[in-house]
Length: 115
Image (tube, rainbow, N blue to C red; front, side, top):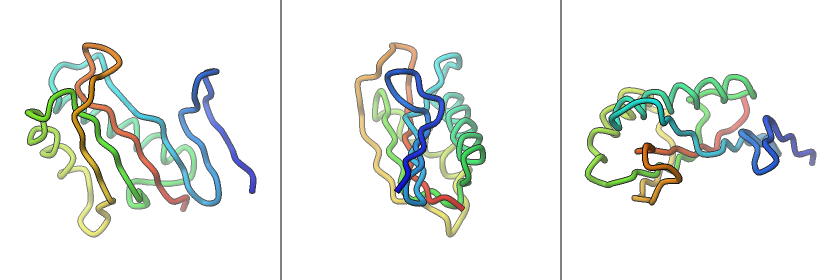
């Protein structure tokens, strides 16, 4: 089976497609303050990448959400819950993690089926 890698940086690819599945690298937003604002931007990026490489949010299989602090869980979920459509909820995990940069509050990694 062919593996297609997109937008490689020499360190990673923003998207990898293999065997009818798309894998997105962790998406972040460092130019907004507040976890709600960052989550909105991250979800927009995810939607754009999925559409660009043959999927959409209805085809998300799994999401892993990394939060700088679990005290932000409820605020992040307010944005997430408004974004995910009823009947299309993916499997999901959410963990607290030390982020790569101080300004990052949330990072989301996605696995989705290709349409």
